[in-house]
Image 1 (tube, rainbow, N blue to C red):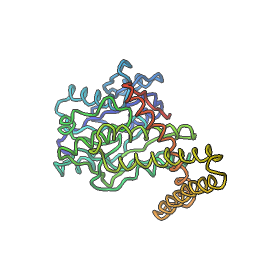
Image 2: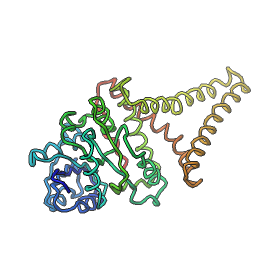
Image 3: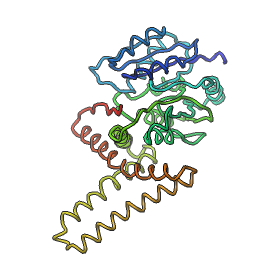
Length: 336
């Protein structure tokens, strides 16, 4: 490596053995700060046993990943002001062996880069369709992109300039940071390198539903906060959630409820039309995923869950707007 110094910030909450694998995967020689958000499973004791710095957050302000990351990088720089880059790692992830050297080469080669990240993979994609969906989700295009996820190597200069993450966001804090950095000329790059192994451990539909609900909340809050300056793709995603998760179901409900008014034939035609629209959308998603090289079983499951997920995402949108309008802070949407 070069003389440029990397520090590590790991965040977690009741990650158990996943956190142990995470901390053990970090090579010797890096300064590590672990930030804990109210764990009750011995995570704090184990982190201390590894020799790293441990920060325990209180629950007076509420726990968020954004708040944990901010507490971590600020504590790290207090301890070692000479740190140039910070690798953020979620506590349910393990770092790939060669990631640090590849990431450092990439980010030091371009002064415009605020963030570099690589391929996050699911540790057990075969355990459930939900894990496999996560693995597919992580496979974003290589090159300059609009945003990153939780695992990323971040330039300290850019992080200070943006004043870190937005503490109050319970989801979508990484795109929020990337958007603000982009406004001042910074860029985000995904490089062709293995970065981390993630253990989503989503084995049940209910857990997957909560995760999709959190995504809907993130889309809504991002657009609510940034308006027309929000990422265009996120504005389109929010419109898609409204259309498939609210507008069409509302029309369907009105047709069913008003069958006596419209007449059974007209109501039946309307209901069949809307159901046909959903079916056509399923096949559209299915064919697109199939043509990307995925097996037909996965493509079919993907298409079905994307459509069902619109309803889960819509519940997250409602939660976001309801809390914001009433001036209340939403609690964490945890899926594990």
